[in-house]
Image (cartoon, rainbow, N blue to C red; front, side, top):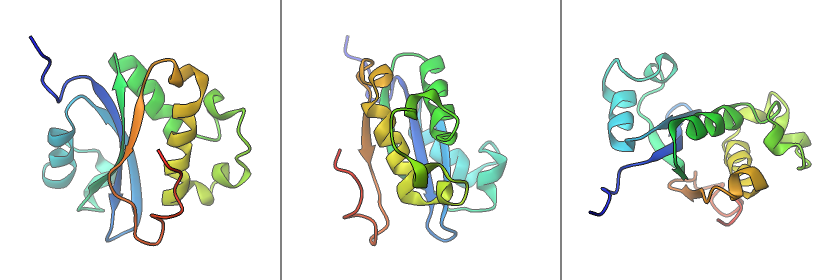
Length: 140
């Protein structure tokens, strides 16, 4: 029996176009989770004040919740994760630059290419990029 398309775990990056804010999380149901962030009190406390949110990027292919949570933490903390130690990320990991859309995107892109995650066959998809950045993001 084929698996439904919405199974498995994924990490996601939400973008608030009105406020220019980024939120990174993980879930096993993106549609439900986006609805929670935008319309209910079940979303993260941080996301409530910056509504509405759109999905900017997803990283799919995690076989278990633990792997998705591990990637989420690394994505949220690029300056502290061991998964980005081999990259020259001076601008990417500074506290100010860390909140920039393209830096969040690049951190996930580089992590997907790092051997620990590459072996797990995860893949990243850019769903939305701000118009001024669309041509400057790495090709997936």
